[in-house]
Length: 255
Image (cartoon, rainbow, N blue to C red; front, side, top):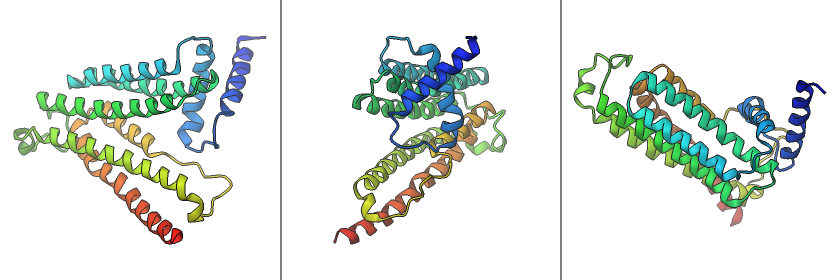
């Protein structure tokens, strides 16, 4: 058997084992066509490891911490290095669940820890970028903003936007959690017709990271904060409105 045939055989074996633990067919487009195949390929070389899935999650957190330290310097070369580390952190984050399913070591704590690690990454990214830009305050390459003296004189605005973005991220996570709970507890009461097969979609989380990386590699830190200051409130206000409408419908059905 050639090396290529061995890799294909192992790939199919890992995919078959991990698929048994999935509750429903995944339809998120980047997961189906990029993250899941990539993590499965990496698993071919990691399947004999003896470390726990939580250790892999911790490695993802550490990568995010190192990336945030590099972001603090607000130097373009270090920002690029931090962006690469951030991407590595995301790759590792996709491996831990795959690894846990393959080793049959899934746990409630592991599920919680994986979500907690994601929240840490969010907090580190925005806090380090805002603090780094505050101390550097260099608008040389900040398109649309480099000629605005008001922003240079009031550099604390970047800290305000950083806090605003973090607060809205927490609201996005909170509203999403409530929507999941409502769907789980009252989904049958709502009697919403479901298609046998959901269409492919791009998740909000993936869109967030795609936009974040785009701003980082183009060195548009200030534009990043302006954009997310406007974009993130929409990400929780619209689901909150839908949540409110669904809860009203549920209450009327229960009564």
